[in-house]
Image (cartoon, rainbow, N blue to C red; front, side, top):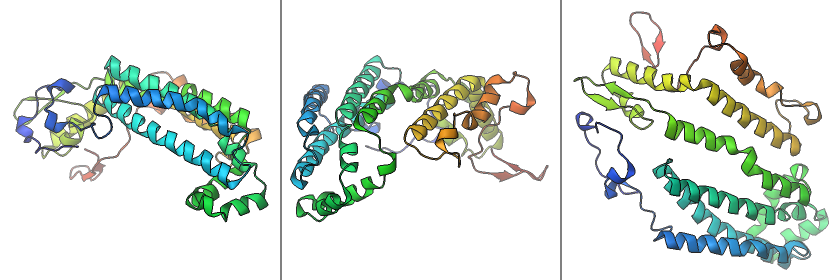
Length: 316
């Protein structure tokens, strides 16, 4: 990331600039990841080509320490490619979440990574199925010295690892079950419009998730107050969509917890149907707009100051 000195408050932009209006010196440099888009596409093609090669390890990945080592090393090599692709696609998307090319790149990579997780779904169950005596021998084998720590940690998840077909199904469904994350991101980073806040000299300062933090540092309490209320009013106006997204997130978490036999809130998984964890969001979704019990209360996560008039702490 290349930095320049930020402009003084009085010279803040009079509108939220698009990506093309930002000076190159103030943008992050992605060339260490990929020099050009063509380089990115070449790495993506390499990832696609590597996915079918997982099958060569499926029947023999745990027959010997050497076989397990070769399987893990291959998976690591694929992971390194996927990691670079993921960082690049994610940062490009962060530049402008409304850009069609960035959205298409991100979606395409998500589909390829899902295919990779499906293809490699046998590795975890295979390791967990190794008999304890054989597993101990593998840990003491010099061939797996660099992998010993990971294998020990992985073994802790034995009670929560499913069979290979079940793991493959979970891998295939993850992109669907977690779709609410994309909805939340697009809503809060692209669709929400926060307007502008009038500054101390009467100028309009565009309010966004970036400028909001700066406005909360302003010496003028009235400006801090207006920025806080106006910012969270936009969230309040979308509270039902946000509550629905939160409910979907909780359902996804409960689903994975049940499938992997984790305890949620002290409730045994056979007795948990997900309704216990959704009580709060369900109240919001069912309530009428005038219901005072569901009045919007934005999270307080800001500097608290003391009000000399009321004697109460205020989060402005």
